[in-house]
Amino acid sequence: MNIKAIIKFKYKNEEIAEIAYKSLEPDNIGYINSSIDGNYFICSLNGDSIGTILATADDLVFCETMVEKISELRTY
Image 1 (tube, rainbow, N blue to C red):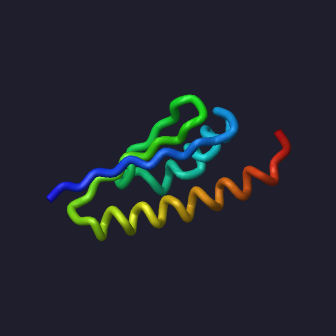
Image 2: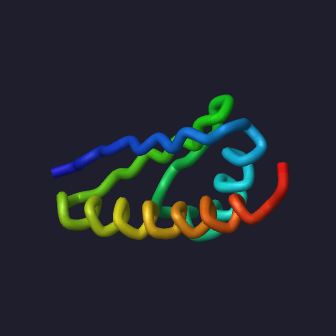
């Protein structure tokens, strides 16, 4: 069975969305297709089981949270 999910992260501006995209891109290669649309960072997940999708989503959200916390330290 092929399971698909899309997760969208919304940011204050496009610059922060791009920071998240570039920060997570190395980890996402081969697992998650991601892109930027304005101030959104969009991730498409595909997997053979719900467990795989949930594990990938959990890792993605954890890593994105770290990027978000670090970006808050930066002055815009």
